[in-house]
Image 1 (tube, each protein chain N blue to C red):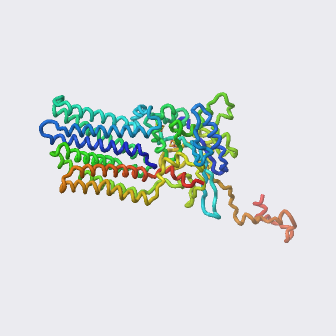
Image 2: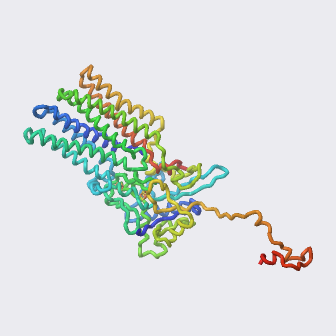
Image 3: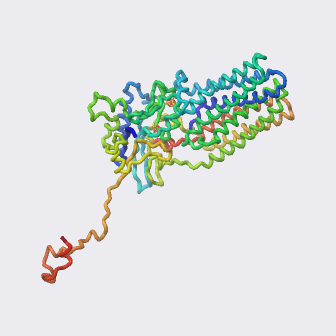
Length: 244
Length: 311
Ligand code: SF4
Ligand code: SF4
């Protein structure tokens, strides 16, 4: 398997601040592909094209309730259903790094790929009339002009809690692979066989199990700390054998 | 899904055109000697329907000027295949019209061959159109052979009803056969559509909010979809109509696509007035527009799971 770049999003850490949303919008509206339009941004019924959204879900019922912030963007599926349906070849998956992209010069805006994405990751650009979606900042991660530490998607750099990891999930030693393996990374809607490259890390609680007998010292403290109530013991006791 | 009128018109118009052409070709052997006006007029009309459908499809595209690019990915995309087969079908219809227009250009055998090839291409076109929807496996209402059956049968039925009406003014000899076939196809359509309604009523959805966010809990409530304004996701995938409207519409569709046209076709036997046949066609066609609207509206896209609550 060749390289597959992906994001790993840690739901245990995400605080739902939308920094990734705004940095994504900022980066991608300033690129050579043209602006990501907003319609009536300050009007009554604003609308806009975004590549990334942070949603909020409530798990359980009060008082046993937990809020989960859930960033959602294109998952760069390893078996993307949105690609084969495209009649023009505008939607494609790159061989070299597994990024799923749209060629904005070929797209006819038929929206078929958006129908064929179960995650709703694609949005039509209402001005350019072509399909757009997360590019994993392909115009940034290979930019030789940037310091190596900044050759990452804008959302990853912006995240104040480091909830977003970026890397090659096919490389078993990468940060993302280790996180998926060791922190229980999972895919969304596995039932459709899309094999999303982006993974999510679940909520994790740190718990240790303490049994009651562990709260009471089993060996006698008297041996060390005081005079034995029955005077010195002459014979060897079991404690002498085991307690060191 | 939120039904797009361009696609509704595309699929219904070409469906009728395809059905009409099939009717013309199967009517031809009855003509006995020579070629009738009827065949030519009906063939041209079939072409007009296909062309109107093609025109409607352009309104669906954001960038219609690049539409030619859609022929390139025929290896993987049913949409691309449809884009290729539709013009081929139109060319065959045109050829069929020309050979009827200029009598003696080709002999009857060749003409019949062209006709049969045309019929075959029409069936392929029904298949391609329906597969665009049936191949999207997580749109569970669409991902079924019923989609293909219904597209084919409903288009054919509508074409035969139109052929019946046409034959009433141009060629009464064929009328009886067309009328019986129109009734037959409409009744078959009723049966297959009822089956698909029945199936879609009982779909067990494989995706749920639990699989969508990957959290195992019985009660997961969305508190925010991430934006208060609308977006492509809130516009394109849901019809925003009430359940009552949908179920009323379903009843309406059953009545005006199937019951009324069949009643009118039968009524024509008692009162042979051609207006009845034209009315049957128009009523059924309007019903088919509603049927197609319903076909789209009833498809539940799993992405809607992420867009339940604004904030
Ligand atoms: S998340 Fe949707 S758009 Fe992205 S690769 Fe998967 S199917 Fe395609
Ligand atoms: S909208 Fe563009 S990218 Fe999507 S299927 Fe149509 S042509 Fe392909």
